[in-house]
Length: 178
Image (cartoon, rainbow, N blue to C red; front, side):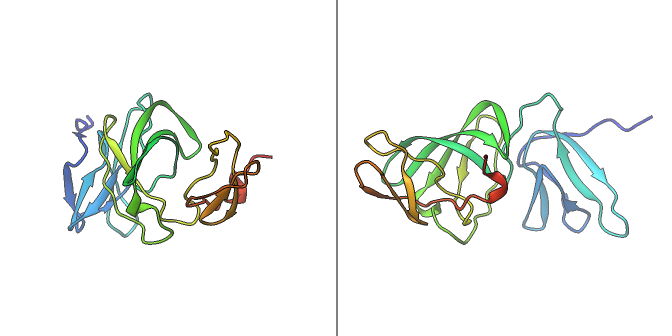
């Protein structure tokens, strides 16, 4: 008879990093492995190494953004300190419902990636553009025209020729649609 499944919640300490290594749905911090989402605990043995601890969700459950996931967002509001966004996609997968996110002004940069722990479905995710591939992909000017990137930090309206400072994403060729 199989042992009963152990369920865990985000932030729950699962084990020490000396006992196992962190897999999907988990993160390591201060010598321990924690759950980054709600689900069932799985432990898979590695050949000659530490077992891998993962947290898996029911296949019917809502896909959640995880630590290090690339997400596509729509900006809802902007002020001088941060932008509020709705997360629409995780990778190339559309979400069943949107999640709220925040991009702080200090997290809009090209390097120095943050380590951020995430919560569950009702959380407000803290996002960063700390890689060259991350940033603004599509923007509209005040005239309502789609802007054109002219450098890694500027976009220009082709109609009014006004320039706006934006951290522009360097979209990888495999993600371009033809």
